[in-house]
Image 1 (cartoon, rainbow, N blue to C red):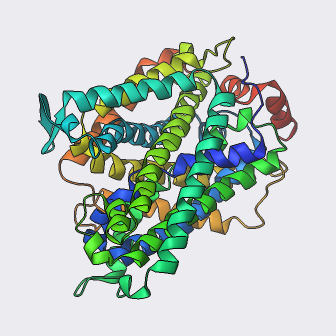
Image 2: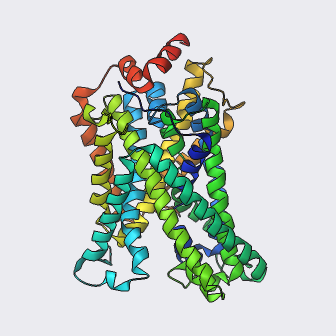
Length: 473
């Protein structure tokens, strides 16, 4: 079984993880979320979601240092629970990533339409109450094909591009933060909730979309096979990516609520982009727009890089057709798996901007399930292989277990119609059923390729890690 080459340094792995988290919509949909939850609901909801995410990430961090292999969570769950749980974990994270990628297919053209509104006109169709013009769809598809062309050239190129774009995000975000806090006022933020609202409930309600915004750090573990560093550092990069990305979200959003009254920003369709312009800083309004565009680029690239490696690991284990485990000799990339991701992204992306919220909500459900399974996988691995140690070892397991428990509570709550974080009936339930149905179909069609556990682990882990595992049985 061919391995991917190791060439990603620690700084670039950290940047890949953080920049895969920082997307585009948070900077302009905050107007919608301010209106729905209050500025406090969104910002404090982000803080709570960050806490849950860090707890959940600890299991990923330790396991990635023990098994630095492509597909990360698929490897961990296969070792702990076997092929059914490994497929469920991989399919869940893949669903979250494809939800985000489908979102970006639409978001790329929507962002451009704010400058060129004629893009939204012309012939098209309507889905979920939103018109999708053929021009918008064509632009989104073209943008997706460009991201695809970057990814098939390998992670050495994409990691370099991510580093440059991330520096741009830091510079632009720094300008917003400095101006927001020096030229704004606390009175624009306080009171942080609308009169008569339920502050605690609003904070909790925002946790699910916030977890979707925070999705992407798993990229660090999924790309571990290509990380040129001691395994311990991979675990540090997992937690570091979350802290870096979440801090960026929270501080920039708080600056947006500081510089201009948030209850007025709640009426703007482009959120912070309009808020800074109305506050008298049109150049910073442009900067916020550029943050949205750069964030779309970085997250699009990062998730498009990770998704094929999930497919690669599933194919290595015999859970998907073996052709998806093939690696290009010239580019050292999983070419067939990357093409499949392209097909999925464009296939779901045609649903358009009316489905954007659906993608966010479903992504939150999928990652919550994957986080919970991985937390359980760590406990099982510690029990079955107590001497395995990759250098990043938790002193106590209760924080990672708590993170997994909170994640599964949130995931289950989305399925209860009367829950404050319930999926939208019936559309999101139908989309969830379709993805689960597709997974069951793929699993059933691939049953002839299913391997014995020992053989699958040999393919998943590679010769060196497999022999180390056998010595620790």
